Length: 143
Image 1: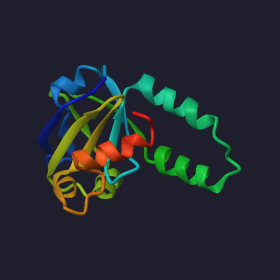
Image 2: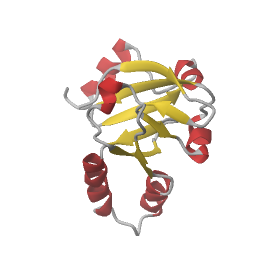
Image 3: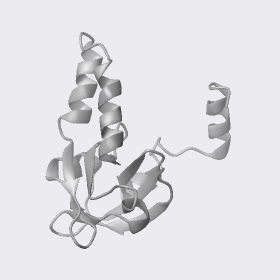
Image 4: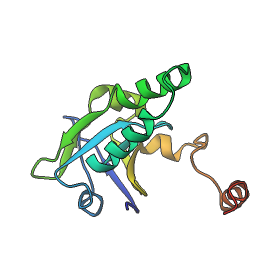
């Protein structure tokens, strides 16, 4: 399980250091893809396979399912860590997330989220909630 937040950056060669406390749970390789929000996601190979198994059960006759598969899978890539614990973020994924230099990298249970810091800190970022909003939203799930 991944948790915690780190403020880091991407270099001129589109490489980012995955924080060691998060990297330890990934093994020597990981899968990088687009998130549903304007962020990137890193999965372990095992968790990626679990996601693919769930997705394979969705009805591909539904255009929304096909669009989701394209979003999630078409730009996914396998990444290997270099000796410094870095991975390369492809330009297409960098553009999608609005990444220029500064990052926010956070553990989110079975995955790691990578955000452009200015996107994460933006007042218009709907992905962040206040405590009261969490409480109200979780009531719907009997939490």
